[in-house]
Image 1 (tube, rainbow, N blue to C red):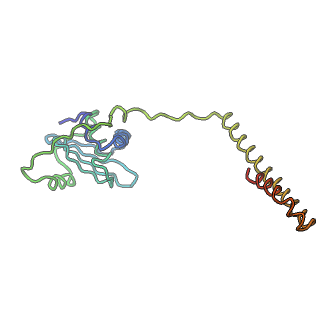
Image 2 (cartoon, rainbow, N blue to C red):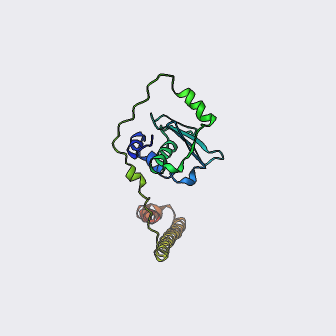
Image 3 (tube, rainbow, N blue to C red):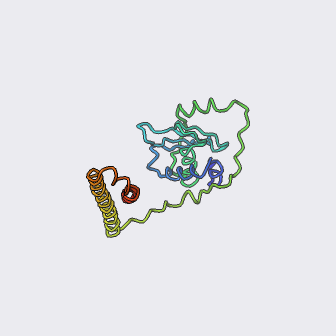
Amino acid sequence: MQLDLKTIEALAPDQASLGAAAKLTKRSNWPRLEAHEQLPLIWGECQGSGSNPYRVAFDTSDHGYKCTCPSRKFPCKHILALAWIDATAPDSFARVDQTPDWVNDWLGRRRKPGQPPAQAPARAEGKSIDEASRPEEIAPVEDAAAAERREAAQRKRAEDTRSAVSAALDELDQWIADQLRLGLAGFVGASSERCRRIAAVLSI
């Protein structure tokens, strides 16, 4: 049973998962994609950041799934991507008449005999396959002249700050020398105004 995009949209836990799944729909991400000739099963191996690919399986009849990735989202982006490929490029799957052992193990544990299949989830608001499929906008690249002007302005601001601080420190040194020369009486008379002026310069 081939899937449609609306079903995948409804299965996704959120828009971010759809966006992540869209990036995994390229065939190069999947060294193995297979579908059973008779059973409503698709499975594959998706290459992640580790050395071993994630094993992903999906039952297209009742939307049961299995993935070996550590994601806490259910279904994860790998499940959504596998279903997405089935909905848009079913010929990507090699047709086989036997399932791998790991798929058989999952099938044996996932449902007791006679248990009815799960119902397809209703479509949730705030999720869009169309939005997830749109190419990401690339931020405009700053031209070399603008970058040079910006860096020059930053250098000038830094130099102005260094000059102001240096001048303030020179004035502070002169003020301290004056106080030592004039003694305590001169310090008390003019200390308030000069301290405020030096503090204002140092706070630039």
